[in-house]
Image (cartoon, rainbow, N blue to C red):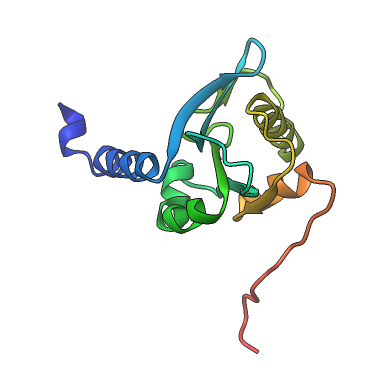
Length: 147
């Protein structure tokens, strides 16, 4: 009953509907005994589209970070949107808390979904994790101070 009046729960429901409406489905994948990763993946992978991995920054979960962009991006890409560990529905009991460990878990998750080659976009903390997960990395930064 409390979820009926919760701002967060009502937004989560809206975001879930939005993600599902754009052709994504919610999945949970176990990586060994102690790590669970949650990810939004294409309901049907389109081989003619490139794959795009969206890594969120600090916040509630991936849906809150990417909802504004998801409908435009799913038109051109096979989209993969994981919750990083300790956000949303992803968790582990392993003691490792590094960006490298996050990147290893994301790589294992993508391998489990047969998504081996993809473009990566990361915001804030997701940029740190994304930088650990690829063969090469391009970092773009908008200046914090005026010209």
